[in-house]
Image (cartoon, rainbow over all chains, first blue to last red; front, side):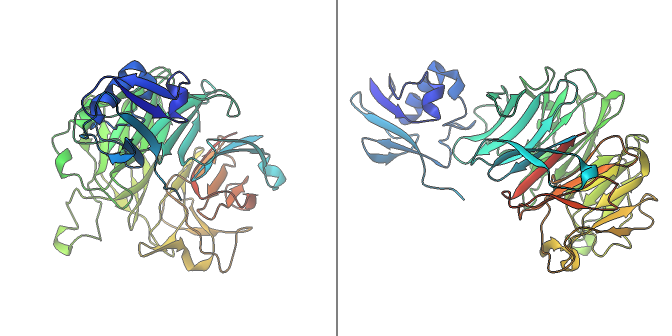
Length: 86
Length: 357
């Protein structure tokens, strides 16, 4: 069971909880499980293609990950807004 | 009293004022602070506000509220089919339909959404999404945006929409089927031999004349056009303007002969024509044009007015007009463009302006 950490506004959409535990072999599987548990999150991290949105960064144990990055049961996944704006 | 919804790069600004006073409006509310708000509409039937917001991080969403200062709820269904090869990029426009509770939203990539419950839930129009020609649609500089939706007063089955750069689309069966409405449009940006008959048509804005619904006016990517047959065919009416390039277009609801445009220098120089901010008006359906700039910056003015940033309010006689620029300035006229005043300045870059009188 890997841990997923989020901040606002995702935290608010996930019952106000910053840390969550899900099963999944890849980042994409974990994030899909996250969305299924909290339907309000649909579309906020992954787009309709199943891709991580362009300005969202996902870190797996502190290293930048992609949808296909493998995760272990002990993994810590951080979902953060990218350093971007205008 | 008029309420103005100014959608900007940094949130939604709500302003209120009396255009007859000719003074800046009061800023009564700001919502979605820091977020790009593409468009906002108050549905006059329900009083509900609907706003399109494109979070740089979390993608495009629609939100609704009764009070702009209160909590906003996310509308459901604003997404493309999952598992495909496309993602929704942006909602460009929201328009009230003719049927009870009906709303439309247009977006990128060339999509139309429909709501039958006043904006709470939405569905993708599948006939347009699945149109066999879609694979050939070309995006304009702003993306493949469905930016104009013009219902037919009293006829909920009839609708015209426009996509940049995939031209005009017409339906007579409430969106169950669509056909093109491009006859007469000329794409000067295409090779000479392809300028007539091409479907790569960069429409910038459509507005229908409410009292003569078969009449639609169009600002094109180089050219101003009028259709007198409900969008089946078009005639060019831009002669007499300092430039026939621009983005928005507005009509007078009380006079189907009246139309207003905001010329920009050219597609290569998208600022107010000749260095002065000016609205041009025709009172004879485009045969003749007159400058209407009293009260607007008259020299060294290089403003850009985007396609959704010009609107009318009221029933006409005279019509109220409002527009905003990417400079953050908003201007208004309470007398059909004869005189203008500054509604607000130093806002964020303006994406869209809508008004309710």
